[in-house]
Image (cartoon, rainbow, N blue to C red; front, side):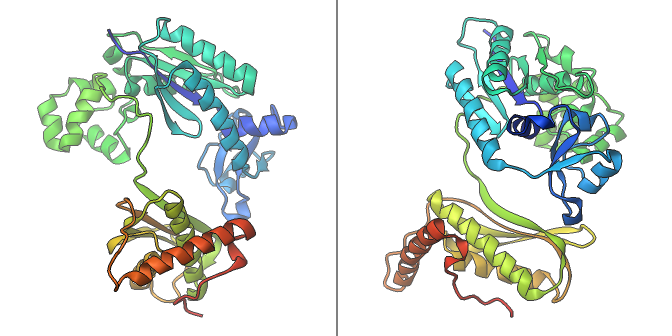
Length: 390
Protein backbone atom coordinates (compact mmCIF):
# COMPACT_ATOMS: atom_id res chain seq x y z
CA UNK A 1 0.00 0.00 0.00
CA UNK A 2 1.31 3.52 -0.79
CA UNK A 3 2.19 5.76 2.11
CA UNK A 4 0.08 8.75 3.17
CA UNK A 5 2.23 11.75 4.09
CA UNK A 6 0.95 15.17 5.14
CA UNK A 7 3.09 18.29 4.97
CA UNK A 8 1.59 21.02 7.17
CA UNK A 9 2.79 24.62 7.05
CA UNK A 10 1.31 27.40 9.18
CA UNK A 11 0.34 30.43 7.07
CA UNK A 12 2.33 33.61 7.88
CA UNK A 13 2.90 32.10 11.32
CA UNK A 14 4.65 34.97 13.10
CA UNK A 15 2.08 37.43 11.81
CA UNK A 16 -0.83 35.18 12.79
CA UNK A 17 0.52 34.95 16.35
CA UNK A 18 0.97 38.73 16.42
CA UNK A 19 -2.64 39.21 15.28
CA UNK A 20 -3.84 36.95 18.08
CA UNK A 21 -1.76 38.99 20.52
CA UNK A 22 -2.98 42.32 19.06
CA UNK A 23 -6.25 41.93 17.10
CA UNK A 24 -5.95 45.53 15.78
CA UNK A 25 -3.32 44.21 13.35
CA UNK A 26 -5.81 42.01 11.50
CA UNK A 27 -6.22 43.05 7.90
CA UNK A 28 -3.36 45.57 8.17
CA UNK A 29 -0.11 45.66 6.24
CA UNK A 30 2.58 44.88 8.81
CA UNK A 31 5.88 43.06 9.06
CA UNK A 32 7.70 41.34 11.90
CA UNK A 33 11.36 42.33 11.99
CA UNK A 34 13.92 44.99 12.80
CA UNK A 35 13.90 48.72 12.13
CA UNK A 36 15.38 49.88 8.80
CA UNK A 37 17.86 52.21 10.51
CA UNK A 38 19.19 49.12 12.33
CA UNK A 39 19.51 47.16 9.07
CA UNK A 40 16.45 45.16 9.97
CA UNK A 41 14.99 42.57 7.63
CA UNK A 42 11.48 41.19 7.25
CA UNK A 43 11.12 37.96 9.25
CA UNK A 44 7.46 37.58 8.28
CA UNK A 45 4.83 39.79 6.74
CA UNK A 46 1.05 39.85 6.65
CA UNK A 47 -0.82 38.95 3.49
CA UNK A 48 -1.95 42.56 3.15
CA UNK A 49 1.74 43.53 3.02
CA UNK A 50 2.50 40.75 0.53
CA UNK A 51 -0.09 42.23 -1.81
CA UNK A 52 2.24 45.26 -2.07
CA UNK A 53 5.26 43.10 -2.90
CA UNK A 54 6.74 42.78 0.59
CA UNK A 55 8.44 39.43 1.18
CA UNK A 56 10.31 37.61 3.96
CA UNK A 57 14.09 38.21 4.12
CA UNK A 58 13.66 41.58 2.36
CA UNK A 59 15.51 44.55 3.88
CA UNK A 60 12.99 46.54 5.91
CA UNK A 61 13.94 49.75 4.09
CA UNK A 62 12.95 48.15 0.78
CA UNK A 63 9.70 46.88 2.33
CA UNK A 64 8.79 50.40 3.46
CA UNK A 65 9.52 51.75 -0.02
CA UNK A 66 7.08 49.23 -1.51
CA UNK A 67 4.48 49.73 1.21
CA UNK A 68 4.82 53.15 2.94
CA UNK A 69 1.97 52.40 5.35
CA UNK A 70 3.73 49.23 6.55
CA UNK A 71 3.75 48.85 10.33
CA UNK A 72 6.88 47.27 11.83
CA UNK A 73 6.34 44.91 14.75
CA UNK A 74 9.31 43.60 16.78
CA UNK A 75 9.43 39.83 17.08
CA UNK A 76 8.06 38.07 20.17
CA UNK A 77 9.79 34.72 19.86
CA UNK A 78 8.57 33.39 23.19
CA UNK A 79 5.00 33.69 21.88
CA UNK A 80 5.91 31.93 18.63
CA UNK A 81 7.54 29.10 20.57
CA UNK A 82 4.49 28.65 22.79
CA UNK A 83 2.12 28.59 19.81
CA UNK A 84 4.34 26.14 17.94
CA UNK A 85 4.35 23.71 20.87
CA UNK A 86 0.54 23.76 20.95
CA UNK A 87 0.32 23.04 17.22
CA UNK A 88 2.81 20.17 17.41
CA UNK A 89 0.91 18.70 20.35
CA UNK A 90 -2.26 18.61 18.21
CA UNK A 91 -0.35 16.87 15.42
CA UNK A 92 0.97 14.23 17.81
CA UNK A 93 -2.58 13.51 18.92
CA UNK A 94 -3.16 12.27 15.36
CA UNK A 95 0.03 10.19 15.08
CA UNK A 96 3.35 9.89 16.90
CA UNK A 97 5.06 9.90 13.48
CA UNK A 98 5.61 13.67 13.34
CA UNK A 99 8.77 15.24 11.94
CA UNK A 100 9.01 18.88 12.94
CA UNK A 101 11.02 20.78 10.31
CA UNK A 102 10.82 24.24 11.86
CA UNK A 103 8.75 26.28 14.30
CA UNK A 104 5.83 26.35 11.81
CA UNK A 105 6.27 23.28 9.60
CA UNK A 106 6.01 19.49 10.00
CA UNK A 107 5.48 16.18 8.22
CA UNK A 108 3.06 13.50 9.44
CA UNK A 109 2.98 9.85 8.37
CA UNK A 110 -0.65 8.74 8.57
CA UNK A 111 -0.23 5.57 6.50
CA UNK A 112 -1.59 3.37 9.29
CA UNK A 113 -4.79 5.40 9.73
CA UNK A 114 -7.88 4.15 7.86
CA UNK A 115 -9.29 7.53 6.78
CA UNK A 116 -8.28 9.30 3.60
CA UNK A 117 -5.39 11.75 3.96
CA UNK A 118 -7.55 14.66 2.82
CA UNK A 119 -10.13 13.96 5.52
CA UNK A 120 -7.49 13.83 8.24
CA UNK A 121 -5.69 16.88 6.90
CA UNK A 122 -8.76 19.09 6.67
CA UNK A 123 -9.84 18.05 10.15
CA UNK A 124 -6.43 19.08 11.47
CA UNK A 125 -6.62 22.43 9.68
CA UNK A 126 -10.04 23.10 11.18
CA UNK A 127 -8.93 22.09 14.67
CA UNK A 128 -5.84 24.34 14.54
CA UNK A 129 -7.99 27.19 13.28
CA UNK A 130 -10.75 26.78 15.86
CA UNK A 131 -8.58 26.05 18.91
CA UNK A 132 -5.51 28.20 18.22
CA UNK A 133 -6.79 30.77 15.70
CA UNK A 134 -3.99 29.87 13.28
CA UNK A 135 -4.37 29.22 9.57
CA UNK A 136 -2.44 26.37 7.93
CA UNK A 137 -1.98 24.82 4.51
CA UNK A 138 -1.35 21.15 3.75
CA UNK A 139 0.04 19.03 0.97
CA UNK A 140 -0.78 15.31 0.83
CA UNK A 141 1.08 12.70 -1.20
CA UNK A 142 2.83 9.34 -0.97
CA UNK A 143 6.16 10.85 0.11
CA UNK A 144 7.71 13.89 1.78
CA UNK A 145 9.11 15.44 -1.39
CA UNK A 146 5.84 15.55 -3.30
CA UNK A 147 3.77 16.52 -0.24
CA UNK A 148 6.02 19.53 0.38
CA UNK A 149 5.96 20.66 -3.26
CA UNK A 150 2.18 20.13 -3.37
CA UNK A 151 1.81 22.45 -0.39
CA UNK A 152 4.02 25.06 -2.04
CA UNK A 153 1.85 24.92 -5.17
CA UNK A 154 -1.35 25.22 -3.15
CA UNK A 155 -0.12 28.20 -1.16
CA UNK A 156 1.00 30.04 -4.31
CA UNK A 157 -2.43 29.54 -5.86
CA UNK A 158 -4.12 31.39 -2.99
CA UNK A 159 -5.92 34.69 -3.49
CA UNK A 160 -3.49 37.63 -3.10
CA UNK A 161 -3.88 39.47 0.19
CA UNK A 162 -5.49 36.54 2.02
CA UNK A 163 -4.29 33.52 4.00
CA UNK A 164 -4.36 30.55 1.58
CA UNK A 165 -5.68 27.86 3.98
CA UNK A 166 -4.90 25.50 1.08
CA UNK A 167 -5.31 21.74 0.71
CA UNK A 168 -3.48 20.10 -2.19
CA UNK A 169 -3.63 16.35 -2.79
CA UNK A 170 -1.47 14.35 -5.22
CA UNK A 171 -3.02 10.88 -5.77
CA UNK A 172 -0.79 7.81 -5.61
CA UNK A 173 0.74 7.01 -8.99
CA UNK A 174 0.44 10.56 -10.30
CA UNK A 175 3.49 12.09 -8.64
CA UNK A 176 5.56 12.50 -11.84
CA UNK A 177 2.54 13.87 -13.71
CA UNK A 178 1.97 16.48 -11.00
CA UNK A 179 5.61 17.54 -10.89
CA UNK A 180 6.24 17.58 -14.64
CA UNK A 181 5.07 21.12 -15.58
CA UNK A 182 6.54 22.83 -12.50
CA UNK A 183 9.69 24.99 -12.74
CA UNK A 184 12.93 23.10 -12.09
CA UNK A 185 13.68 25.48 -9.19
CA UNK A 186 10.77 24.04 -7.18
CA UNK A 187 12.49 20.66 -6.90
CA UNK A 188 14.40 19.96 -3.68
CA UNK A 189 18.11 20.16 -4.36
CA UNK A 190 17.84 22.70 -7.17
CA UNK A 191 19.38 25.92 -5.93
CA UNK A 192 20.25 28.96 -8.08
CA UNK A 193 23.55 27.48 -9.33
CA UNK A 194 22.03 24.10 -10.22
CA UNK A 195 19.06 25.82 -11.83
CA UNK A 196 21.41 27.87 -13.99
CA UNK A 197 23.38 24.77 -15.06
CA UNK A 198 20.14 22.98 -15.92
CA UNK A 199 18.96 25.98 -17.96
CA UNK A 200 22.23 25.88 -19.90
CA UNK A 201 21.33 22.27 -20.78
CA UNK A 202 17.90 23.43 -21.96
CA UNK A 203 16.16 22.06 -18.87
CA UNK A 204 13.59 24.40 -17.32
CA UNK A 205 10.92 22.13 -15.82
CA UNK A 206 10.91 19.18 -13.44
CA UNK A 207 9.49 17.01 -16.23
CA UNK A 208 12.48 17.82 -18.41
CA UNK A 209 14.80 16.65 -15.62
CA UNK A 210 12.81 13.42 -15.36
CA UNK A 211 13.07 12.82 -19.12
CA UNK A 212 16.81 13.50 -19.30
CA UNK A 213 18.99 10.34 -19.22
CA UNK A 214 19.82 9.63 -15.59
CA UNK A 215 23.32 8.46 -16.52
CA UNK A 216 24.13 11.82 -18.10
CA UNK A 217 22.64 13.80 -15.18
CA UNK A 218 24.75 11.72 -12.78
CA UNK A 219 27.90 12.31 -14.83
CA UNK A 220 27.28 16.06 -14.82
CA UNK A 221 26.19 16.47 -11.19
CA UNK A 222 27.60 13.38 -9.45
CA UNK A 223 25.54 11.65 -6.76
CA UNK A 224 23.41 14.78 -6.55
CA UNK A 225 22.42 14.22 -10.17
CA UNK A 226 21.10 10.75 -9.41
CA UNK A 227 18.93 12.21 -6.63
CA UNK A 228 17.67 14.95 -8.97
CA UNK A 229 16.61 12.38 -11.54
CA UNK A 230 14.78 10.24 -8.98
CA UNK A 231 13.13 13.21 -7.29
CA UNK A 232 11.98 14.60 -10.63
CA UNK A 233 10.09 11.33 -11.16
CA UNK A 234 8.43 11.73 -7.77
CA UNK A 235 10.52 9.03 -6.05
CA UNK A 236 11.38 9.67 -2.40
CA UNK A 237 11.69 6.85 0.14
CA UNK A 238 12.88 8.88 3.14
CA UNK A 239 11.07 8.01 6.37
CA UNK A 240 9.62 10.41 8.90
CA UNK A 241 12.35 11.34 11.38
CA UNK A 242 10.74 11.90 14.76
CA UNK A 243 14.02 13.12 16.28
CA UNK A 244 16.68 15.26 14.63
CA UNK A 245 20.38 15.02 15.39
CA UNK A 246 21.97 18.37 16.27
CA UNK A 247 24.84 18.84 13.82
CA UNK A 248 26.08 22.26 14.88
CA UNK A 249 25.46 25.08 17.33
CA UNK A 250 26.14 28.68 16.37
CA UNK A 251 25.44 32.33 17.22
CA UNK A 252 25.86 35.43 15.07
CA UNK A 253 24.99 39.11 15.15
CA UNK A 254 24.66 41.90 12.60
CA UNK A 255 25.90 45.27 13.84
CA UNK A 256 23.56 48.27 13.50
CA UNK A 257 26.52 50.09 11.94
CA UNK A 258 29.77 48.70 10.58
CA UNK A 259 32.28 48.26 13.41
CA UNK A 260 36.00 48.81 12.89
CA UNK A 261 37.12 48.88 16.54
CA UNK A 262 39.17 45.73 17.21
CA UNK A 263 38.24 45.57 20.90
CA UNK A 264 34.49 45.87 20.30
CA UNK A 265 34.58 43.20 17.62
CA UNK A 266 36.54 40.80 19.82
CA UNK A 267 34.26 41.45 22.81
CA UNK A 268 31.28 40.63 20.60
CA UNK A 269 33.01 37.42 19.51
CA UNK A 270 33.58 36.52 23.16
CA UNK A 271 29.92 37.09 24.04
CA UNK A 272 28.80 34.94 21.10
CA UNK A 273 31.25 32.21 22.06
CA UNK A 274 29.98 32.15 25.63
CA UNK A 275 26.40 31.72 24.37
CA UNK A 276 27.47 28.84 22.13
CA UNK A 277 29.35 27.16 24.97
CA UNK A 278 26.36 27.49 27.32
CA UNK A 279 24.11 25.88 24.71
CA UNK A 280 26.63 23.06 24.33
CA UNK A 281 26.73 22.42 28.06
CA UNK A 282 22.95 22.55 28.32
CA UNK A 283 22.73 19.87 25.61
CA UNK A 284 25.58 17.92 27.27
CA UNK A 285 27.60 18.21 24.07
CA UNK A 286 30.98 19.46 22.98
CA UNK A 287 32.38 20.48 19.62
CA UNK A 288 35.48 19.44 17.68
CA UNK A 289 35.49 22.14 14.96
CA UNK A 290 35.21 25.89 15.58
CA UNK A 291 33.90 27.99 12.69
CA UNK A 292 34.15 31.76 12.29
CA UNK A 293 31.81 33.71 10.01
CA UNK A 294 32.46 37.32 9.06
CA UNK A 295 30.82 39.76 6.66
CA UNK A 296 32.49 42.93 5.40
CA UNK A 297 30.80 46.24 4.54
CA UNK A 298 30.37 45.21 0.88
CA UNK A 299 28.43 42.09 1.98
CA UNK A 300 31.30 39.74 1.13
CA UNK A 301 30.94 36.83 3.57
CA UNK A 302 33.84 34.58 4.56
CA UNK A 303 34.10 31.53 6.80
CA UNK A 304 37.12 29.87 8.34
CA UNK A 305 37.36 26.89 10.66
CA UNK A 306 39.82 25.29 13.05
CA UNK A 307 39.89 21.84 14.60
CA UNK A 308 40.39 21.53 18.35
CA UNK A 309 42.66 18.83 19.87
CA UNK A 310 39.63 17.28 21.63
CA UNK A 311 35.86 17.70 21.72
CA UNK A 312 35.22 20.66 24.02
CA UNK A 313 32.43 22.65 25.67
CA UNK A 314 34.87 25.10 27.28
CA UNK A 315 34.44 28.85 26.64
CA UNK A 316 38.15 29.57 26.67
CA UNK A 317 39.16 26.76 24.32
CA UNK A 318 36.47 27.67 21.79
CA UNK A 319 37.13 31.41 22.06
CA UNK A 320 40.89 31.03 21.64
CA UNK A 321 40.32 29.14 18.40
CA UNK A 322 37.76 31.67 17.14
CA UNK A 323 39.97 34.61 18.10
CA UNK A 324 42.97 33.20 16.24
CA UNK A 325 40.78 32.70 13.15
CA UNK A 326 39.54 36.29 13.42
CA UNK A 327 43.01 37.81 13.79
CA UNK A 328 44.38 35.76 10.90
CA UNK A 329 41.46 36.69 8.62
CA UNK A 330 40.74 40.33 9.47
CA UNK A 331 43.25 43.17 9.10
CA UNK A 332 43.18 45.42 12.15
CA UNK A 333 40.71 48.28 11.71
CA UNK A 334 38.77 46.70 8.82
CA UNK A 335 35.01 47.40 9.23
CA UNK A 336 32.77 44.43 9.99
CA UNK A 337 29.04 44.15 9.29
CA UNK A 338 28.34 40.69 10.79
CA UNK A 339 30.26 38.23 12.91
CA UNK A 340 29.37 34.74 14.04
CA UNK A 341 30.89 31.67 15.69
CA UNK A 342 29.78 28.05 15.67
CA UNK A 343 30.93 24.57 16.54
CA UNK A 344 30.36 21.27 14.73
CA UNK A 345 31.60 17.73 15.04
CA UNK A 346 29.43 17.40 18.13
CA UNK A 347 29.64 14.66 20.71
CA UNK A 348 30.03 14.10 24.45
CA UNK A 349 32.78 16.36 25.85
CA UNK A 350 35.99 14.45 26.50
CA UNK A 351 36.46 13.92 30.24
CA UNK A 352 40.20 13.95 30.86
CA UNK A 353 41.52 11.76 33.69
CA UNK A 354 45.25 12.52 33.70
CA UNK A 355 46.86 14.75 36.31
CA UNK A 356 47.97 17.08 33.52
CA UNK A 357 44.37 17.68 32.49
CA UNK A 358 42.93 18.06 35.98
CA UNK A 359 42.76 21.82 35.39
CA UNK A 360 40.27 21.24 32.55
CA UNK A 361 37.95 19.32 34.86
CA UNK A 362 38.25 22.04 37.50
CA UNK A 363 37.48 24.63 34.81
CA UNK A 364 34.33 22.72 33.85
CA UNK A 365 33.15 22.63 37.45
CA UNK A 366 33.76 26.38 37.74
CA UNK A 367 31.89 26.96 34.49
CA UNK A 368 28.85 25.10 35.82
CA UNK A 369 28.78 27.53 38.75
CA UNK A 370 29.10 30.51 36.40
CA UNK A 371 26.31 29.16 34.18
CA UNK A 372 23.99 28.90 37.16
CA UNK A 373 24.84 32.41 38.38
CA UNK A 374 24.25 33.89 34.92
CA UNK A 375 21.00 31.99 34.59
CA UNK A 376 19.72 33.39 37.89
CA UNK A 377 21.13 36.92 37.81
CA UNK A 378 21.85 37.71 34.16
CA UNK A 379 24.79 37.33 31.78
CA UNK A 380 26.63 40.40 33.13
CA UNK A 381 26.73 39.24 36.76
CA UNK A 382 30.28 37.91 36.33
CA UNK A 383 32.76 37.81 33.47
CA UNK A 384 36.05 36.07 32.81
CA UNK A 385 39.23 37.88 31.92
CA UNK A 386 40.23 37.54 28.26
CA UNK A 387 42.86 38.15 25.62
CA UNK A 388 40.77 40.86 23.95
CA UNK A 389 42.48 44.01 22.72
CA UNK A 390 41.57 47.14 24.70
